[in-house]
Image (cartoon, rainbow, N blue to C red; front, side):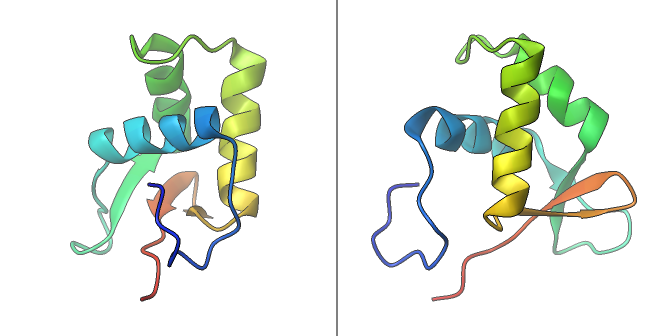
Length: 87
């Protein structure tokens, strides 16, 4: 996720690692087949159980908040949807 052409503001590497983990566990949205998504509560579980990350609950919540604030995800009805960067 280290792409210099990505228009989204940069984040700490550990948060980008959390983003990568969530993206690998996301599915097509129920509403839109071409949009990857994951329910927020499931996203927290994924982050807390991941062998690649060692996050406390507060860290997982912080990572999700930062990913939402920086536009890596957007939230619809407690579902986090992956925002594809524009080229």
